[in-house]
Length: 282
Image (cartoon, rainbow, N blue to C red; front, top):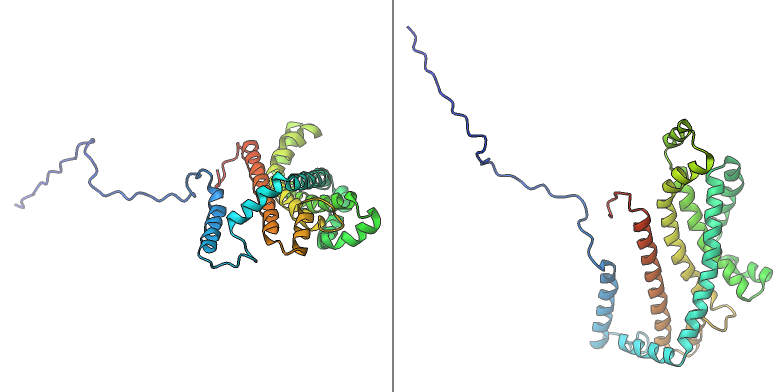
């Protein structure tokens, strides 16, 4: 007779803790957004600039210390020079940006929602994009003179091109299934644009808007050195003639502050308007 050995298996209680070590999975997202994180880079540059100036590593005639630039800026502001030039530059940039923004959005919608519009508009805009905008300055001077009009026109061109390109690309990238769904639901043209086209194009529009805002300041600094009697660019051009590097740096710092603030405002509006999106940055 063969003996049979029976092994009794005792089940562990259901509430017994798992003795196996658990490995915490590392998250792949960038993490929580840090407050005022975009100021870290500029503040680091400012700290390195101040440290190099204090250590005597920089030639004061070529690169004045930050406190020298600050003192010069305060002096220019108190005597009214800087305030008047800032107001003039803001007015020029504002007019040019408004015209370029309107033109970019209208042309992108006309080209993105109509094959006939795309045939008439897109090729012309691409040709304009291939031509350096600042290279149009001599021609615009002949057409519009050397007053304010040509400066505003050049800024408008600098602004409308990135807004058009990014908005048009966003329109072209809308999934065709949404169009088919809108047709099945019987949406009108106006409702289709409002509920499908606009939400689909907004991300690209805001990218173009940020580029347009930056482009308006870049074009302004060049244009204000051409037959201008006021503005930050004119102030910097006059300082070049007299070797005033501190005044030039004041102008550059003001341009940088304007660019950083305007870009931050656009990003804030973008986050509010596109709060429904769940993206890597959010």
